[in-house]
Image (cartoon, rainbow over all chains, first blue to last red):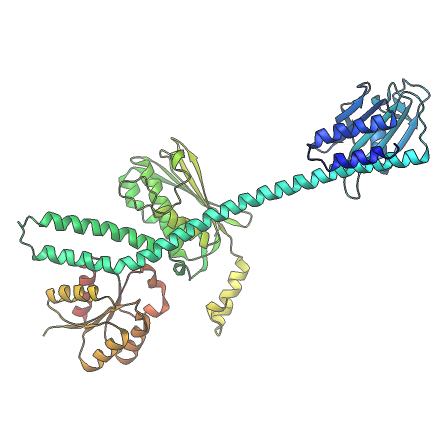
Length: 420
Length: 120
């Protein structure tokens, strides 16, 4: 049946088997249909500099493991993009027209097909015979079609792999977005809830203080009211923290210097660091790191990170603050020499109300995360258990030329800052 | 003579709390539940200090502040709010002080005392 090979190849190409299985069967089909003594298929290596044996059918004799892509018969086929049909009088010769190819040893009649389409060269296919084997034109046509079908199999697999890779990447990005959105939504919910709760809470707490003042000093109710006042203060702390989450929080962005902002944030902790015997190491980028920022908000973000770092160290330790420029990012790193973060908690540290501290609100890192996200920045944590944690904040650099031009225009008057 | 303070807040509980506390401090306290009511009271009564909530339905505190300062330039106004970030708002620059609401009224009472002592 002359067309069996085409039909069988087509069936193979559309089957659901793995690529290596398909290729093994494909060279098997070729060998059977045309009675070659050996069919060997070579594919481009991972490094891309040569062609490695992928599958063969028939004798193993003369199968070379890897071909260089530029030399020998392979180099010739690759360069010309055309099939080479060679015939040697000396069966044992390993060269043809001066081109050395150890794979030729033992065969007289060898056809080498390029496996390529208009933009990619996938590999080469060796079809070898011990004796002269002439193919009639229609048989030769069938062989060419079969080889094209093998190229289709390769191309199809390549597309599927690309698709899978893109899909995986997309899923990763989607997961990240989802969790970021979830955190933002949670924070926003907490913030609007906090706003509703704040006023009544202040009023309840205020009246509790009034009640206390009206009580006699030795009244048995004094400790009860004290407890109420204490608990309400705790609630107020949480509520005020949550309110900082509000989206409208971040409106006034101006060009600022990341070095200055971080410096101002750590200045607030000078006394605390001294009291805890913590030394502060600053390794700042030389020159300003211009970012478009709400400096007050960014300071809050860094305050939280610095406060956490100090708390994780207890007595003694080193707080390292560094800034640097990485391509279009202004980067700040806050490292401590504390105990690090328990790996079990790593997934939760940015979730609102998660805390490991006795009196924590669980809002420090979520607020920091939210502020950084609203600055179109990225926050990452590198954790060394027992050796401390490093929080890395990346913010987009603002274009300094544009910033300067804007300042000049504003000074010129007439244009509102909001128009930018 | 007793100083007269006008408390403007849409929350009844807070109005009562401020009234109690400030009367305790020896002031006379007038109450208004909204911006328009506050402006009406200011037209009729003589007031030494206004305690103004920012987030109110209808006319908000920033707008009330603007109108108060247009009409009575030297009348001191203290803004009270749940939001620490209003400090950056252009409209609030005109106020004499800014206090974040808390059940602990120490800061508020201290601010009231300071401002009233300047108006002696």
